[in-house]
Length: 192
Image (cartoon, rainbow, N blue to C red; front, side):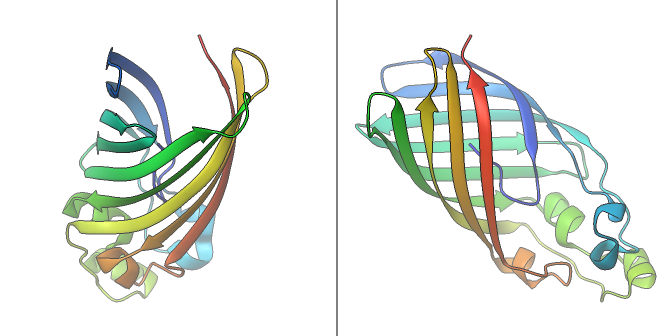
């Protein structure tokens, strides 16, 4: 599962409960936050969002080639909580290539929305943005397509194309310059 922008999540994952058509797991992760210096033009006066440890619960249920999955992520007070829900499919194109596609949405608490999309009175005075309060609600909807290629029995290469659309208070925020958020992810994974 890929976290929606602007959050990049790195986690240590365990899925102790597995059945023929389900998985339940937990993870300890890290949200890297946001630093004003990374986008001085748009974030001047907004301050930093500190790096935060996260606790994650996730599950997946399969109906043949269709998967329904969800993830709850809880961080520190600034991070708040997010909930992701996805509907997708994965199939073998060849013996070594798996193709996947999914649609999904992310909901976020008021703490999360205000940290990333809100503008407090203090931030307004320092940045010039109008004061803005973002409430809890749907933050984004998106689609992902990608593939996993088995380089060896233990090593996979992944390529993922992600297109998220910010909606609601996230889209309406004065901090949001682009509501359409495309991304490309690549990774190499090793199976233990």
